[in-house]
Image (cartoon, rainbow, N blue to C red; front, side, top):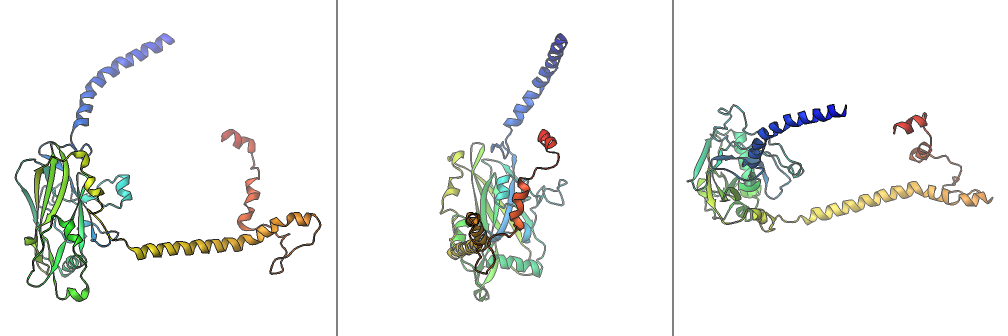
Length: 352
């Protein structure tokens, strides 16, 4: 019997070893292939650009999906009319951290490939004539300083929707990126909005800094010369210019810029903090008051049990009701169930 089992184990080992020799090269190849998980890319390999959300810069908690605004689908192989897989605007599978962070990543439709040393690549699309409702969405977003967020290789970038400018168009100050421009802007009130016109950015520059085969930094800037006034019936031609720039920065330092408070700061809403603190105090006091009123009689009744056992007279509370002799009600009857043996106790003991 033992010899038979030993021979069977040897036969299984003989069949398993050749199979492992065949599968091992494929496993090694899969582990060395560049993708978003390893953050290493080969030349001409696709790099996913995800759109996350859009909303007011002063209130990041108010967020909407990117294509809530009437942006057009990029004219690439991922366009809904060309892509059979229908990847455009498809929701990404989120990790636990992304879900807790409130992310809503969707495929942007852009076809970005890792092409270091190449010239600038441009992807464009043209919207249909804006309806009155679509024009109002863009105008509201510009007036309240809305921004959008994108992710490339797990690195976030932020961009502006547009600007509120006088009728003449005005001059937009050149900033390092859209994030600095958002810090220097403020919301426009309805009274001031009547003297200004909403303009939308139609050209963006996506600058991708790489070191060897890894992406280290991503910046996004909007071209002030591409501002166009938002009107019902207008058509916009949105363009994304992608440029790869070599850098000496190390890959492990690419998140250091996001840890800097000055990079993405928001004012502290002290009134909201004070309001929440006072609400917590009020609720704690309310719960304490209810517990005291509920348990006061119980404390007095249980504390005077020994006095009654010694033959003293029955005591009453402030309302003239006796402190003893009342049966437990409600949740106080739980102690009778906790110590009650169930039916079939030996069987339960054997099973559990």
